[in-house]
Image 1: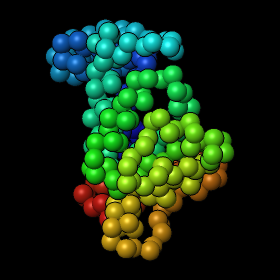
Image 2: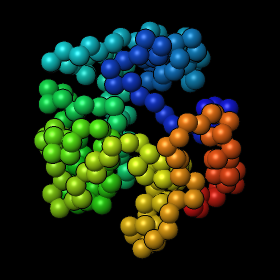
Image 3: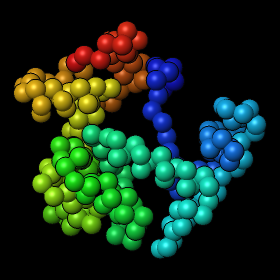
Length: 206
């Protein structure tokens, strides 16, 4: 993807990553073969947090830093999309994270929470009730496929599309929607190239 754009999303590894390295002094991380982008020292290997019942997310400095980052990002987000996560009720730290964020008053009342899962809606509602319960807010939106999500409808413009539709009363549709079909990287690049050109000009219009 770095061949398509240099403006790539940040990644966090909430349970560690054997390919990730960490600088304990600067709290920076990257590929284990790289050096710290701040001090230039070699990165140290990171530990894995195994799926046990009582996980200690604060014991390891790298894992603790990863959770600190994701807490801030989720709290500052207007749209959060979950996919590839089964939301087990035993994951106490994740439950606490989302409860603290989505139950802090009216701040997140107009957020959009998308959950992509092929399970039936009733089952998903029961699964996620411990995680997200925002009084007076919109209910989470359950989708069967990524291609139904706002990320697919407005690639690189999800916030702009959401704001136009739900706050400005716009009834249009995304013109660069990612369709559910097999695409090569070249085909995908050709589709989103007009958006990337706009990005370079600081033009974030739909």
